[in-house]
Image (tube, rainbow, N blue to C red):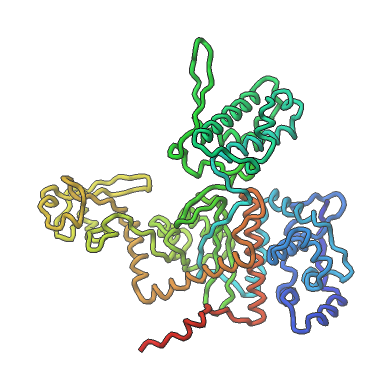
Length: 557
């Protein structure tokens, strides 16, 4: 298919007439076309298509259809049928009523072109450009960000199921690429063990039999990998995606030893205990989506990804999603704050104030946000988890007075520190402060300060710029103005709720991080369409619902 960019024509008169008769009280899609126009242009996608060949469908229409299908949670078949059958879709797309639409497979091909061209972000960015030209979104306002989990489109497997299903997936891939070679090398028992999906068979119940099963699957897996390294193995077969997934799963879950016995090398493997496994960030959870990761957060566990949504939140303005970041589940929020600021700056939409929860805040980010982007990051910072901070009346690190010029620290009992030593740890530069042993040993408040038997109190504090930036951020939230400002952050929870309940935000449709990110971008654009329609129709934001019983509560006197 080739692309021959052309002008976008107005909505056909017959489509306008029939749509007006069918929707005398108005319609969201009719309003959006009238207020925003077509949003996209063929020139936005010119690099995705060759110059020669049969002309393809206008990509500006396919981009709109992609957003509409995520707004209404439709499959490709259903979206293609809506283009053929629905008057409001034809109006928004500028089609004749007699237009027969297109085959549903075009939508999948279009998404593939977006990903291969690396321009999937255009689905959201062109809409923001159009809104900026209309004065609906602007830079240097107030924005807020939060993240939520995205479940991968896979079946969650335990360790035994994972090793067994990964072996089966590798065999199926090899059976497609090199069936003759696999038929010659596969033992008969492999057909009995790996012909059916692992969940279709009942795993052994006793621990002894489960251990034996894990041992058997591991030996089979390593044997297959060894065969793929042999001289008769098909070229490139050892680099296939499912085979690579098998290699990584075996490396994580098994320990392989080669011992020399009577001049021969004998393969020995051992299924690792749970406590021996490397971090979850290194582990594959499914051979079908090797990028999905396991994470536990606030007593919630999931396998998949995490999406970060940023939106405008200035009062009396339409609240639009301005940026979407999708990561593997194991990527912590604090590692994305700078990337979010950079993305907003690239779009010429950096906020003046950015409201976030504690997971996005650390001292370094507070400083870099202000110095590099001119953004005031507003958030409480991660809490101190020391026992002193969790014990009422105890002396946590912020109870100590610091004299930066004299390089001394005074404790709540009035004792001065003895040692001030510059250093670093895995989190960056740190200052190690140690108090005098005699002062601490005879201190009447020792039980509130340290649990060490003989050692004096030690503190690890950040360098002055970081320490003061974090203290200022916390101090802001103790003021009435700071609390009033930060209260607006809670509204992003409503955005996540809207995305989850109405747009399928929390469930990935596809395998892989790139496709999941494209889904989240299209979902964000769909949410923006919904909000723009409400804004143009002057529909107010819904208020928090109160139960009938709660309404009966007597007023405080």
